[in-house]
Image 1 (cartoon, rainbow, N blue to C red):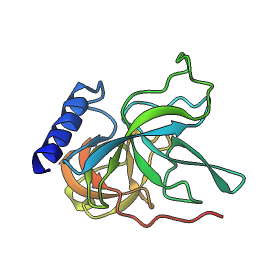
Image 2: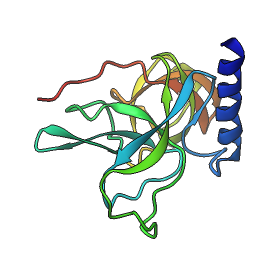
Image 3: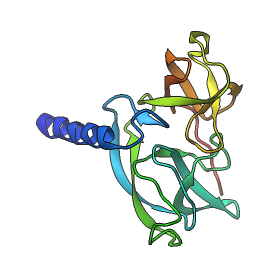
Image 4: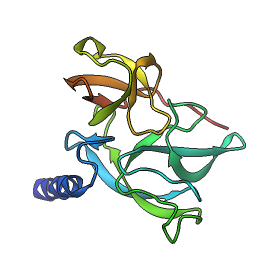
Length: 171
């Protein structure tokens, strides 16, 4: 069983290092992630390495994922990191429920690398809870919010975070 888990982590790390966005957007920083397929909203272009969350329509979920908002709000909670881009030129772009692979955290303390999308990032920001950029491809490190918790400083443009913030409910 242990060997199977190690093999699974190796597969995910192999996939991660083959991803085009190795130096941009979000990327798992430890072995606490697993890959699952989810249905996605129709006609929504989403970048590789972007955060995704539940789509909300009419104050309820649709069962599909879409680009994550700036924070956990109205039930549109964080789910994971998209492993491949969804482009307007894709043959299934306008199809609701198209299946795409998403890396999801195995627990709340799983860490991901992030890119600074806005603000001045220093070691003093470790421990802050901040908003996600509207593109869901980085963090707004100077804007308090419920998007992610900063866990480590790497450089002025890169750090680590977790998504250990409370989720919300919808009807």
